[in-house]
Structure formats: C-alpha cells, structure tokens
Image: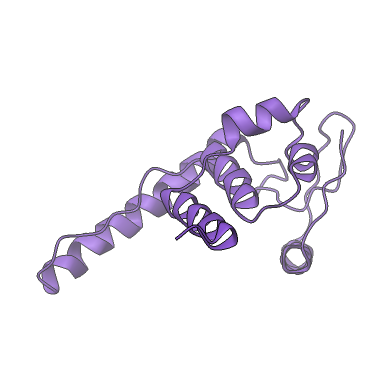
Length: 145
C-alpha cells in the first residue's frame, strides 16, 4: 500500500467521473475490503487489467481503421498507432518522469519499486531525442567546441 500524489487535472477528471457515476446510480462491490470505487462497470464491478487492455486495443484499432480511410483520401501512407497496454502506459509514464529529470527517489516511490535499480534498469528508457538534448547541454556547459 502506498500513497501516490495526483495532479490537479487528474483529480478533476476523477471528480467528473464520480459525478457521472452518481447520475448513473452507484453500484458498489467489495474487493479485498475496499468499496466505493469510482470506475465501475454496469454491474458495479471493478475493471480488470485485461478489460482495460481490450478497451485500449479497440481504441487503437478504431483509430487505425479511420487513419486508413483518411490516408487513402489524402493519398499518403497511413500513420498507425502502435499496440498500447496498461503496462506500456506505465513504462511510458516512468520514462517521461526520467526525461523530465524528476528525482529518481520520487520516481521509485511513485512507481512502487522496492529498489532504484528496478526503476532505472527496467522502466527508465531514454529516447534518442533526450540523449541528443543531454549531450548538447553537456557540450554547452563544458564549452568544448
């Protein structure tokens, strides 16, 4: 169990979803002693990771189908979205925190990792653009050229 700080826009989105659920009529379930979940299905149950992954897959497929049609009309190659899953979103979040130079200890605790090694070795991928920016920053600071 950990406490995760949440950005204000996310809190606003949660409140909006809560109001929607109130209008729809809350249906509650109990999971490991917890109740009053904000995101519930029509039966009041919580969404499983598999169900959320399926929803992401459906969104990507719908987008890519639409992109096919638009690309054909515009006479260009389609630009597809790649496969997306909850776990990929988690990796992306961690990577973006690293790219923004967020304190590594903060990243470790937010991600719920037992060690910084896990955070850095498994989740902290660095984009080629970030690599380029950091080398340029270092060159400017060192004033080598």
